[in-house]
Amino acid sequence: MANEKVEFQVYNSMTRQKEVFIPKEPGKVKMYVCGVTSYDYSHIGHARAYVAFDLLYRYLKYLGYEVMYVRNFTDVDDKIIRRANELGEDPTALSGRYCQEFLKDMDDLQCLQPTHQPRVTEHMEQIKEMIAKIMANGCAYTINGDVYFSVDSFPEYGRLSGRKLEDNRAGERVEVDSRKKNPADFALWKSAKPGEPSWESPWGPGRPGWHIECSAMSAHYLTHSFDIHGGGMDLTFPHHENEIAQSCAACRESNISYWMHNGFVNIDDEKMSKSLGNFFTIREVTRLYHPLALRYFLLGNHYRSPVNYSISQIEIASESVFYIYQTLLDSEEALSAFQQGTETAKNAKGRVTPQAQECINKLRNELKTKLSDDLHTPTILNAALQEALKLMNSCLTILKKKQQKQQHLSASLSLTELLKEVKAVLDVLGLLAGSTCAEVLQQFKERALKRAELTEEDVLHAIEERALARKNKDFARSDQIRTDLAAKGISLMDITGTTETAWRPCVRSIQEQPASPAQPKKSAAAVQEQPSAPAQPKKSAAAVQEQPVAPSQQKQPSAAPQQEQPAAASAQQDHPTVPPQ
Image (tube, rainbow, N blue to C red; front, top):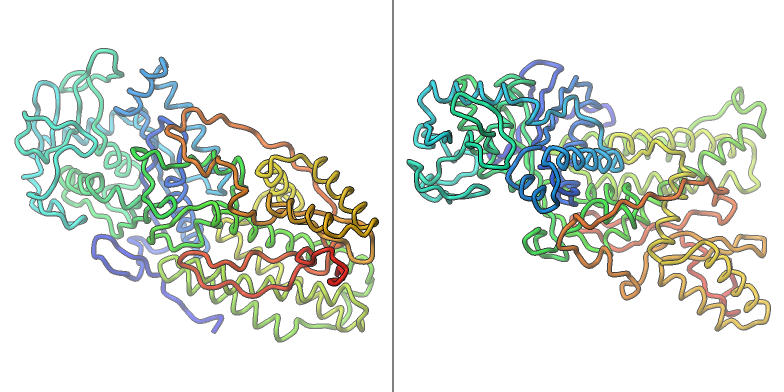
């Protein structure tokens, strides 16, 4: 079953059905994804889109394709100009700054760099050439320096969105202009206005309309005929509809095989919208939660389904990733210690247990079958991966106990292969960080302290106070200290066989959560970047307890139930009727 050939299928928005993916050129894929308009910090709706298409990019490469991935920047636009005027900045400088901020967010979210990241201002000649071709083919007209595309010249207009021409709304990111032949006609070129950036053209000084840029840049890098065009569902109309019309008007051979669109982000069950003020920037979220937690949360939902962002869900995702990395770290350290303490380990005869091999085969098979089914990630995260992590912890338990050498060797070999396979899966999903596991765990702890509005010294002081209360048999007080910290997202763990106590992040009580980012901001402009402190590797939690604390068992939206994990020592209270583990 592990070697079963699986066909990669994607949902094509044009045909409204899943189709087997067949590239135009065997072994090669050309993909274009609409990028951001860079006038502000990017929000989690952007994260949803670019994590989804980064997953597609990674999986295509995993399947062995040579991928040319193009994602653009809109760096001249009405919104950019308005924002620059509000702030008293040069539009080009403002846009360039937010392009760099976007790239930082993408790096934080483990999104691979596309092959090309073109900017509108660097491709004016290609844009003007395409407009000239459209006009030469009789599909556009000029009015006082403005150039409009005539939708009446393209009978198939509306085939992507399914909208009839008479149902289309005028406007849609552009002002209604009574001079147009048809209210649905859209601007290819806008004549210059005082104080706005402009470029010379055959129709007079001006700048491009919004839609033409993607057609021109995709054709420049990928030709008029390529494999995949992607973006958010909100771009289906009018942006992608207009792209199809103008691209076909410029070149009759224009053809895109698969149109792919990701779903919307809701905030507490209400559609996220800047106009409603209920949006979070990526930077607001990653200031308090590790970027891997945000990526994990997004991948926990199918890319085409709506995703509901809430504090409770990002808390669960954060705990889940912490559990993954704690298991990875404990496994690495246990294997290192075992190999150092067993000189004959490499030469000894042993084999991976049948249970471990079955788990490895299942994880490998699930990765391919689920991702090949239109990138279905939830089952991988919440079933196959959790089973592998649980088995890894079982192997760790065997290595810590006094067992026969053969049992230790078998557990070591099984853990080695499980670790390798889990890391391979995490890499495809974009959840394998470039930092060490210890550094990632420390970054999670730093953000947990920030959410709790505590310092590590505060936590250590509370641990000392609790130890004194236990010594004095004031178990009610020691219980209260543990409970108060847990409500703030700090879980205490008593180290087995010692009097020491360590701490780790955990899911907080809802009522204890701070207003930010639970309370959306009206504008992201006020968000200031707050760099995290350098990560300091900590002693492995393998010495803290027999098993890492498993992620919360709450159900994630659109996901299979998580597998039951071993109970954690931190779940015990200090009262003597329940002896500490």
